[in-house]
Amino acid sequence: MFQKRFAWALLATLLWPAAHASAAELQSYLGIGLGVFGLEHSEPGLKQKNNVFGGFLNGGVDFNDYLGIQLRVGTTDKGKGGFSVGTLGLPATFTRSQRADYFASYLVRLRYAVSPDMRLYALAGATTAKVSVSFAPAVATSNTVTKTGFSYGAGFNADINDRWIGGLEWVQYWTGVKPGANQKMNIWGAVASVTAHF
Image (tube, rainbow, N blue to C red):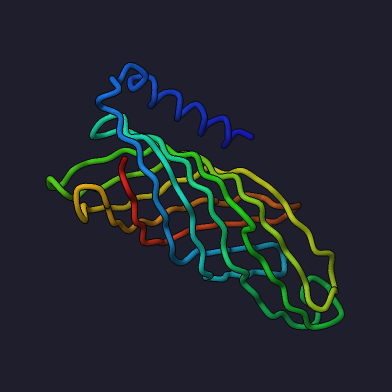
């Protein structure tokens, strides 16, 4: 809960100066990002790390050359891990699967132009994600959980032409979020993106 309140407080603080931006300064955009996402779960007696394919759609508004906000919604593929007898006290070998059914990130974006057609940027905010876990065979109960965690990241983008922009980024969506008792989960993404301004 603290992380979510912190993210909203950060968003409000950063956007206050932008509230008076003129319509001429505002620039909106829509885009897509595709790449590798890391799903990392740990609890006593079990650690599972999967690198899976995933992606998102995003949209946002840049208030000026330095400050903007962005919303992104995405999903990831399923990652699997095999575990031996006795793991978590279970009497048989099993496969544990995990995936982010969906995630929604609400972010502040700070930009810096390194040339007229290339920019570096930093992201900060929060991500709400629904994570599902299943077991085969059914040696434990499958479950889903929805949690919110602090998010941050960085990237760069460059103009393809007057409307289209391509980029690369890395974002840590979750760090040490607790989906259950004595459990922690991290989610990160490294993606390539294409964005259209309008």
